[in-house]
Length: 155
Image 1 (cartoon, rainbow, N blue to C red):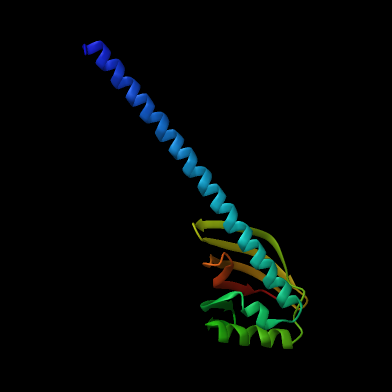
Image 2 (image 1 turned 45 degrees about the vertical axis):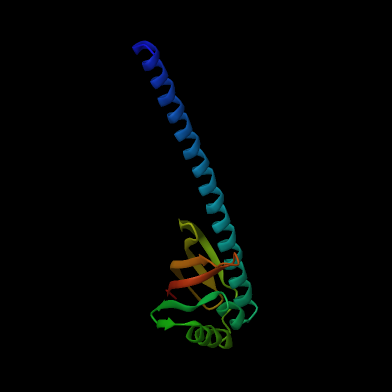
């Protein structure tokens, strides 16, 4: 093969390789976008389930949306570790008549293949505040559960 044909062949191979790389990158971006959407949908559904449980007075249902070893940091009330402590906190609030929680200015930020962080302002019948970090993690069954819950009561 003469030098001209060889350089033309090499150029063609390089172009084909570049096109294949672009195709692979586009495919990976598409798969990533689909996974991000899957995480966002699971988190939105779980968050709605949490609010529905709390608003209906079902503290156990709200606590069921936390991982067993979850951490909840509530300013100014303290840190609650594990589902049992978290259940006790929500049970106490429900028993005191707190309900009608709504989120405003909600942001869901996918931070990994199976995780998303939520922040929002919140209001309920007897208090309001800010969620600085809800870390939701997809479980093997596709549900999202809270691993970390950081929020502040402002009033």
